[in-house]
Structure formats: structure tokens, C-alpha cells
Image (cartoon, rainbow over all chains, first blue to last red; front, side, top):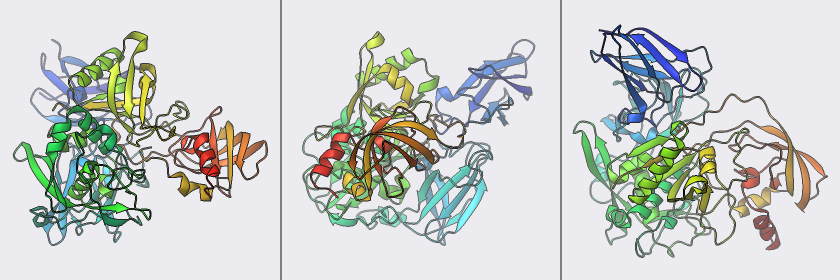
Length: 455
Length: 119
């Protein structure tokens, strides 16, 4: 029996969906607009409700906001998409998750789309997406389906190394597609990924860096989180923070990810979710020791410009380069979630929590437990706003941090964080390595997301 | 924003005036409620619009400046509100330099860079 008489009620703190169906039937409501943070695989993205004897049901929409696209499943297993409408303003823009996708060669220079993540939703259902090739300006525009997937007929023309800028709109936000929401790059041909490398990931557009062979140890002992440092112009904090958290939680497993081939190349084994096999598969990516440096010979991207190449272990620079190579270029690794990196490292996307809709005490206990179990744990901040400005907090907005420690109780609770910059904001000097212990209240004020992964 | 501050040696040559100052007022066009939810991938840097900012100058580290200055905060990922203090690096058109504005560098870092003769 289908669901009927669907209507929404905004109760201030929550949006409630009401309707009728077969008495006693279970109805599932999934908030597809809260994805890709909340994929269908994550329990906090959906809720179930059982209809009463009269067939009426009522369910609070998980993380529900005006304009959200919900997928509602009735007892007969059919899904329908409904939009939250209570007469308010839609505050949530459609967000695109480029790291969960990859372009796949279809022949004749055409590329289709595939997912590398178990969470295969690209964006909220019915989002309009515009992609254009930054090399030649050629573009396509299309609409995602009921599940937030690309249409099956999606194809773009390109060649290895091409970067596509992506803009998306839910019809309310970014209606002119002026704000980019991510990038996808054309990866090397499949044959190039077998055996030794032939593909150098393209640098950021206009980057004057030159490639220089960097020698030095891959590891100089167990890797530490302080060795993962973000480059000055590469917006991949999610990746750096996840790598640092991984190094803290399990340096030995991180070492196992990267092999020194002792011929100037390294092989990194990433995990990709194969939807056909319904399991993670290994994807070895081999890269050279050629790393982008500036005119002073300092590393431009991961590894940290304040370090002279060759004086520190190379593992992070190589890991980042391999990830960029896998994705098709450094531009393609801008913009992502920590769980994208967790999934690539561990073959498990882990658990992720919306800080602002979580119960604070339960959230603190969860963070503490994750650290005690040596699970890599990453948290991320809100965007800046005049209502809740970041200035003076030593924290950066829209930024990921590795969690190093969770301690205390009651009013003395703290979280110790590591900034991927390798220093605080602003830096406090040469001894500043980016470590910051914040009171729990400060954490709740500025952070919006948290995630961890079991190893 | 996900990007680190620019190297100080990159911005100092562009800074005609450097002041340590407090924000007195900020005038900017009305901003729609900003999405600050965790479903946003990190890395692009969500931008707040350009604003006109009035500063009360406490010290001048480079160039000359009146006791109060009107400057421009370009479209940026950081927010300014009255009461925020810090070093403001200003270009020739009195635009605030740096991805993170007054949080890009500490006063000590700017002073040290100027002392070692950075341009």
C-alpha cells in the first residue's frame, strides 16, 4: 500500500513527516539532502516509524531542514522522493561529493562515471549539475536521479589529465552555477596504472612549481601525525587530517600502505568499493619521487614548505601524490570529506556524526571511546560567520583536524587537536606544531562534523 | 577555510601599510543564512561578501595611517565583527591582504619579518 496524505510540520527543533499507510506497516524516511555526509549506509541518516492501528504514522526527519529531499519507503518497498515544505526558507545548498566518484574510459575519448565509495550518492536527488572541461571549456549539464546518481547516459569528452570543474544547484542556491563545488579529473588510462608509472598527476592550474626528484627515507621510524603537513595552496585538509589520524592510530598499518620499490618509485595500495562485487578491492598506484617544489626548492604540496626536502620522511608527500595520481591530478583532490580518505586507506568509511544534532555528552563519550580504541578520528569546523566568528580562536573555519586526545570530565572536558597546517592560526612561532587543546564548549561552538574508522 | 595562510614573504611585498588595529564596524550587504552543516565537503572555502571595515589603529608597523581607517575586506572565507583585533596588512587600495585576514599572522611574526628586512 502506498503512503498517502504526506505533510510536514516544523516543530522548531525538528521537522516531522506525517502520513498514512497500511496499519502496522513500517515506513522508512531517509534524508538524501544530508548526504553525502549521511549516506544510506549510515544509521543516522534515516528513521523508521510504524503506522498505528488507523494507519497513521509520524516520524522526525533526520537532520531535517526546509527544502530537503527525502526518500520515503513504504511497506511495499517502493521509494518515493518528497521535498520538505513547511513554508520556510531552504537553508541548505546541494553539496557534491567528488571524492566518491571517478571518471571511467568508455572509448573514443569519452568518459562515464563510476563510484569508488560505498556511499554512492553524488549529491541530493534532482540536483542540477554543470561540468566543464577547464582545458577547452566544453561542458555538459544534467540532473541527478531520485537517488542522487548521475544519469546512466552521462558522458563527457576528455583526455588524461583534463580537469572538470563542477557546479551544482538545487534550484534555490547557486542557481547561476557560479560557485564551484568540486573537481573531477580524467585519470590515466587503465594500462598506465599497471606496473610502473607513466602518469604524473597534473599540478594545480597555473602552478609555477617544478618537479624535482626528492630523495630521502620513506620512513625514519614509525610515522607520526606531525609528518603530515598541508601544502600552502592545496585544499586537501580532509586528506591530510585523515592521514595524520591514521599515523597516530596505527603507524604500522600506514607503513603497510606504501612500498618503496627502491628504483625511485613507490607503490601505494588504495581501496576502492566495487559496486558490482559489493566489496572493496585493492588499487595499487605507483608514483615516482618527482615532487613539485618552488623556486627555493621547498615542497609546494603535502609535506610542508617549511621543511627542506630530503630532511624528513617522504611518506606523506608520496601518499598524497599517489592519491592525486589515482584521482587524475592534484586539482581533483581539492574538496572532500575525511571519510573519503579513510575509505581509501582502510576499505571502510567508518562512522560519521553531525555534531550539531548529536547529544553533547554522548558525542564526547563516543569521541573518547574512538581514541581509546585507537581508531583514526577526524573532526571538522563550520564555515565562518559574523554570528560565530572564528577570529581569535586559533581555529580555522571549514577545516579538518586530527583528534589526538579526548580527556577530562564535566566542565573540564577537552579535545586535543592537530591542525594539518603544521601550526596554529596564526602560527605562534617555530615551536608551534599545530597542537591545540580546546574546551568542550569551544568544540561544540565551532565544530560540525566528526568521523572515525575502525582498523 | 581549508587553505593555510600564505607565506609571509609572499604577502609583505604587497603590503603598503601594516597596522595593529581593532575592528570598529563592518558594513556588508545582507547575507543569506550560511550553510554550516557537516554535509559540505571541505576544501573549497565558502566565501563571505566584500565589506567595508572601520579600524581603530593601535600601532602602525609599516607606512602611515590615521587613528581610524576605512578599509576593504575582500570577498573572503573569514568573518570580521567589531572587537576583533590583530595585524592588518593592507595593499595600496586599503584592501586587507591574506586568506585569514588578521589571523593570518601574529603581530610578533609580522614584526620579526619586518625586522629581518623582509620587503
